[in-house]
Length: 254
Image (cartoon, rainbow, N blue to C red; front, side, top):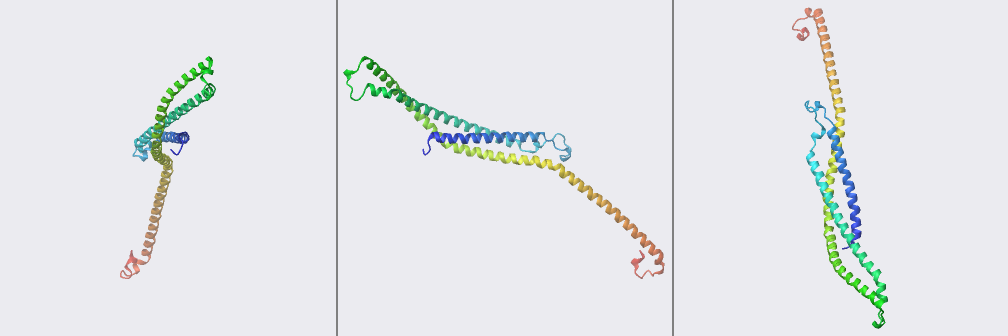
């Protein structure tokens, strides 16, 4: 391994904490958006007079909630991997401390009691007792060391097995939350857009009323102009028509 387990674990821990913190915040934001959608009632005039409709009725909530559940499960899996990794690192550190403690406790005694040039005959009863105690401690230590070897192999195997899963799960989680983030942004815009619908509908009604008023005013003005034209023609005909031959400019007779 190019990176020591403790360093990798520290980096993975920071990444997991950051990821979980960001993602949990996003899930809370999604829930708040849902609450807003559920509490925003739609004007019945927009839905054929139907009462009680909310904006929540117009979204694919099942898909979003399914994505949320998937994201929670993926996050939980990341947390479980991290806990397993942390347990392995903690146990490895404990075993290392066990070895160091034994060395610190008994190393000086070994040198003092069974030095390289000491003669067996010169060893007194007290020293013999100390050697016996040291021997018992050494035997116990080597028995424990054999067990530690097995545990070390198990813990390092666990760590090695976890490494490949981190990147895969992080990638999966990122994809899920990217999709959730896009949906959150879309639904926030949906809420904002709906808030603008009332203003737009009012503008359109005002425009329609203005156009209808203009049409009515125009029709009235045209009718007035038409009536004025009829009056002028009638006056002309009364004054001049009887003096003009019908074959001379026939349209003037009308």
